[in-house]
Image (cartoon, rainbow, N blue to C red; front, side, top):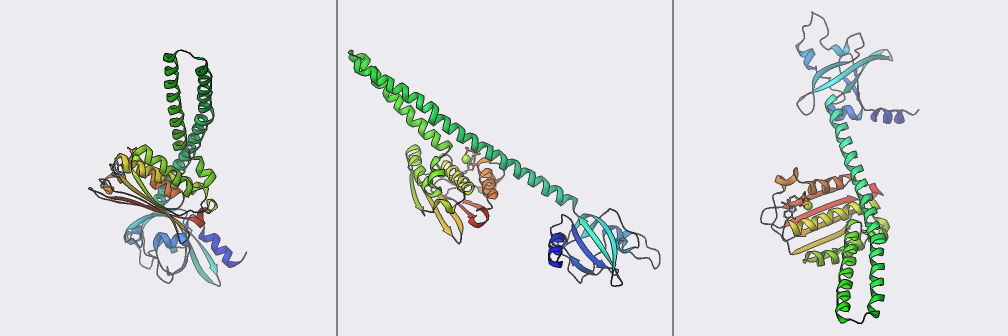
Length: 335
Ligand SMILES: Nc1ncnc2c1ncn2[C@@H]1O[C@H](COP(=O)(O)OP(=O)(O)OP(=O)(O)O)[C@@H](O)[C@H]1O
Ligand SMILES: [Mg+2]
């Protein structure tokens, strides 16, 4: 194996690796050790909290790590770049290269790995829940549109054939009212199934799906929605990114109306340096973003959605308004 490839392998280990000599001078740090400690090659490994305090016999080496014996596992606090004494699990072994003794120090930060694992599991759970939620929404939308919608439409056609054979005006009027009600129900079903899963997103892509939805939202919420939407080709935006960005914009519009009481909303969709950029502005009453950041599910889910696709999201608002939500998603990473 080439030396460079071997170094890459060591860089990808889940432990920090430090190679030092008997004077504790550092000769090598892998990426994780560098991130954990920010010690420098050429510097000396600092004494851990234990070695700083322990009683040392005359002539005895203070640092336990450079003693003759291999240390299986040892836990102590080490000064790191944060200036804090981080708790590390350490183990050592030694090798002799070209007649010089080197000590290999393996570092593991139990807190880090626990927090990292915890965060990974949390993201995975949310990601899987959102996936399941989306596929369930899609199933319900199809069921509403294809099954229930078609059944109601058959009833509507059946009533129409009756209408022609009716002589009594009273019954005829009654039937016309029923027809109107059924038509309205069919419209509502269509709108609901689009809200649940915009099929235009799959067929026409993000930009056109938003343009279509804007007309629905204007009617439904009785607001003016101004748009500046670049007609981005469907294939430029991966399906997963399109779906998450669509959901974030959908939630922002709903928030602008329900919470902000806005009557003008502006949606921008653009491409900037191979990043998808979007903005939702509303002229509503605004809110204290810090106050709501950790307590509101809608905002939290928007942030999670952006994290899933490797994007960023910022919300600018203050009491009295206005509110502006702005996000970027890199397109290279997710394609
Ligand atoms: N555009 C906005 N204008 C004014 N206030 C907002 C806006 N967006 C969010 N908020 C405030 O932030 C809070 C949290 O919004 P969030 O969308 O997270 O709530 P939610 O959990 O989705 O509930 P809901 O379904 O009612 O929106 C709202 O209760 C509101 O006070
Ligand atoms: Mg909300």
